[in-house]
Image (cartoon, rainbow, N blue to C red; front, side, top):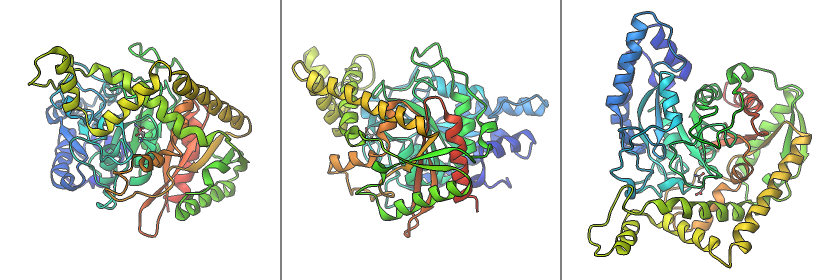
Length: 482
Ligand code: GLN
């Protein structure tokens, strides 16, 4: 095969298959070879779904041989974070408690990718139940950052970001509850998109915090991410929170000039604790946007400092409730030694869940308990409303907001794993968008002196992913494309 698999994009993979430069089957085989030889160190993949990918490839090849019109992602090799269930393919959520769980149905986002012709290569490593910022909380061992193997890829969708960066999948799906798409995208130097809450169905996403969970794509470029999002977005009767809002053709929107757009720069995102190189890169992006004709507006999001505590109250509260279903009866691991029913529940959970998951269940149960509910959970919901108002006011003045995605580039494995609070702060710039429900993306915008990728975050109004992609594309063009 003469194609360089590392350089393939969604569009170029499809074109190669359509023009019969390569068969979908040999493309799949090529990726499996690459995974076998290159994923040992990175450890992005937990399970391969070879049978499924090859069956799909055979279908696409038959269509192409007959000269039939091919669907938009025909033959594109993709992979899925292991928090999305896949029919007949093990889905672990990065947890021992689901080690042998073979779901009987498909997550809607996965079904839509496959219906559009994509080849599902396999399932990707992640922090257990998507709880983490470094991928060190996976029960199956960490993912390493392909740009520097001594560093974390970010989390919790570390495998999804690393697979795209390593070229072991053309594009991937991840999930974002507090930053888990954007933060690993920034650490691995790829594009990661969290759509508006409700834009993509959560049906078949193993729940962490239902009011914050989002599915979204990773790609090498803004236009790859846009093609992926268009495929998975839109109302799904199987998820009552999925929105009945038309999905624009993002690819057509992307190329529109950014001249005249008003770009907000919130002072709270450029304060203490921001790494000097990250600051310099993002400030350079803002200057480039100004040079492209954008109007740069200094804004304030005054409640930003409450976002982390608010997030960790709401996310843990919802997690403690969602994770109650893992009891050794309905799914996954069941403790063998117990003599009574309640001991079986307790032991199954004790043996199946890892330390971070247990910590969150305890925090969330405490925050929801009688007597503390008003002081913690209800208070957090009120602050969430204040954060929403901050953004409503900002978006009266600006069309998009540009910030750093993370305070620092990728840190070393082990650097923060004994200090949960330090780890929680890795999400300081990302959690707010999840709380407010607006879309956000991370676009690579530079490198540190050590060669580590730096990401720039773009936030827009609810359901205005089109403007987000336009600004993201302009940043990509200014920072990467030459
Ligand atoms: N790092 C955050 C957490 O640990 C966010 C995780 C996520 O977005 N899934 O909760």
